[in-house]
Image (tube, rainbow, N blue to C red):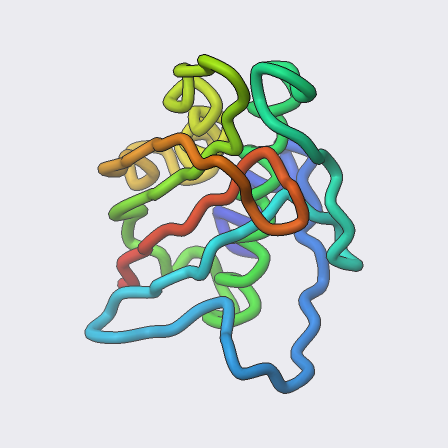
Length: 154
């Protein structure tokens, strides 16, 4: 068991199994030692949304933060499936979070902290990353947040 796998176990996180059936769009693509992870939604292992609605109207800050954290769990599951061992991750490089924002909601960075905080908890200093957090009028399946990211491989 690797260091990152042990850390996930300490945090009480079990990565969901990923569906490998053929699809035109892949969740992870490697190029030049970087892993580009497609936008992750806060969904369960069957692809059903765990949260829906706009943050600031139908979704609380706490639930939005939890949704962003679930996006991180799903991203890690795809990366682990792709590389086999999360200890191969040298660092988290870049994160882009989109928040399905209602009304005059403007705390998108606080929502995406759910993703960023988990990267720090899992990878320590290697989890520190550049980040953008922006509002969106609507997201797929009416989820409150979606996050894509870039990892550097060892």
